[in-house]
Amino acid sequence: MRPMRLPRVVIADPMSIFRSGVCTLLTKEGGFDVVAAADLDQLVAVVEDECPDLALIDADLPPAGGLLAVEKLATRFSTACIVWSFAPTPDMVLAAIRAGAHGYLTKSISSHGLVSALRGLSYGEAPLSRSLASALVQGVRGLGASSPVLEQAARLSAREREVLELVAAGHRNKQVASALYISEFTVKRHVQNILEKLELPSRFAAGSFYSSAVQMGAMTPSARTTA
Amino acid sequence: MTSVVRHAEALGQKLGREPVVAIISRTPIFCEALVEVLEDIAEVRRFPADAADHVGLLRAVHPDAVVIDAEDGIEGATEFASESSAALLHISLVHGTLRTWHRSGWSQVENTGWSPESIRNALLAELYRLDGDS
Image (cartoon, rainbow over all chains, first blue to last red):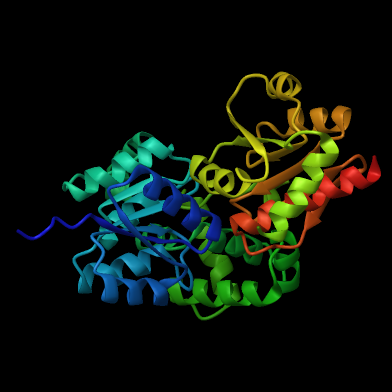
């Protein structure tokens, strides 16, 4: 008789502390095989080699965000994907589900909650943090008013939204880098990703997009630019 | 035995006990990772970020160091660190920043790769700095 294989989980997150946290938790808990990936290339390699049953994917997974990763996996593999992030908006949850994610969790989820969500997913459930279920309903309700602006805005990661807001406020890369405590090189990469995701030709066009997105409620200005 | 454990033991010998580290966290998974690397070198106490009275909890436990990943408890944690000279690290997982509290205010620490070990090392560096000051 063939021994039953444990559900294999890949945790794809750029922050080592989260990869370690999930690995530690699931190893302690038992009943899972855990592997880790720090970016999309590593995730795809792990999925090709290890055929995991489940993937827990950070919404900001480098280089272009978790949604792209979900789309890529959904079209090529049978791995069930959950996206997770800090403070997701209804649009982000909806966009992830549309991209092919089986669920969405917040990064503040309890250890017990995460284990239950992953076990549930391996039994075919669709895990969604309680607070996100209502966000998803709101998002679905807003579908009637949906527009390309809303859909495109939802493709941006939390960090890209911050960068876009500052770019739209007329900040140069150096100023954006200083405001967000990241390198100028990283800002350049974010700007490039933003223009690609929004299919826009320039920073100026990105600024106009941001104004429209704010007007339509797809993006919310932070204290950084409203103060 | 790793050099980190040796250094932590040396610190423990000076203190006459294991250093006590309090973690105030709104992100349990982060906490799991940090506890895993701190367990060998310190006694770790965990508190949820939405606890009602952080200063009271910290005064009761009297940790040598506090690690906090939430905005909510910062005021209480700085109050405690100021009155007790405990080391204090604030980690913003959302913004990817790590800073330490000294009496004169906060100092940003260079991004350390966000591994549990790098945060542990930053914490130990703070404990040594304070030990050197005393």
